[in-house]
Image (cartoon, rainbow, N blue to C red; front, top):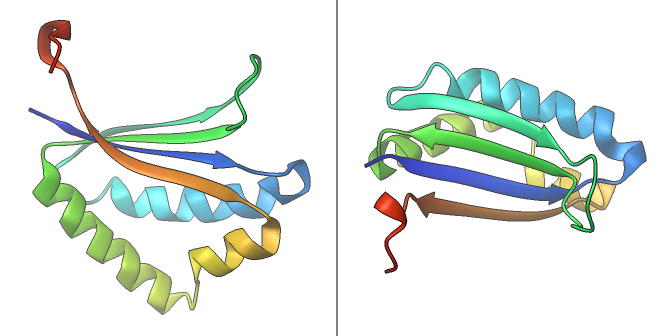
Length: 108
């Protein structure tokens, strides 16, 4: 059963360009990782929700996510990039989470 990494963000309009540049660099690395299935980057265009950017990445399993997390950490170190610092500086709020699919819409 696949595992999904879904990160929701509140990104102020003036911060979008810098934020999306970093997301793009990170997600280019994700595509090269073992266990990567697919990814989607979404921008809200209607509705009352407060999260305006959502990243959705599908993985073979949790082990693949864990390995990718380490690869991302190494990339950020090489680039001298601290995501939490950027989020604080740009007033970005994040809600990261990992999800699993409910097969056949069964209740847990």
